[in-house]
Image (cartoon, rainbow, N blue to C red; front, side):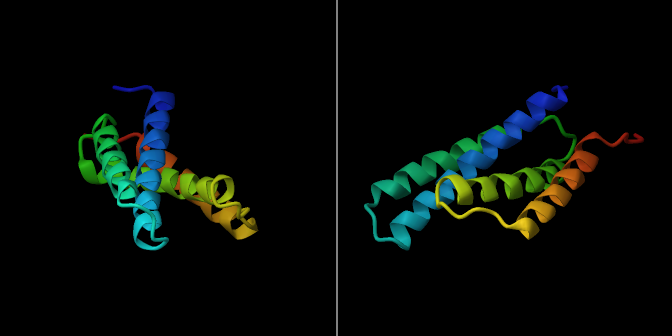
Length: 112
């Protein structure tokens, strides 16, 4: 069983890899950049999928559901850091709710 902090770190790394992979495809297909962007995107998306397999969970669906909240926060961070668009108050409120939901899904006591 992974510690909560390691679990969240893996999710954060997975989110960075997924966003980078999707952004690479965006740059290739929407911005007309070289097909090398697609190659980088593929590698990043493979890394993303691998990282999600490292999370301790009895069910893939639960691991993916919990990941969703981390992805939301990471996407807004990407928007701010890479794209230069600062999240507004509604982005902050929504991402806060998503993180709370993630923590409930990940760390709520479960009956077997």
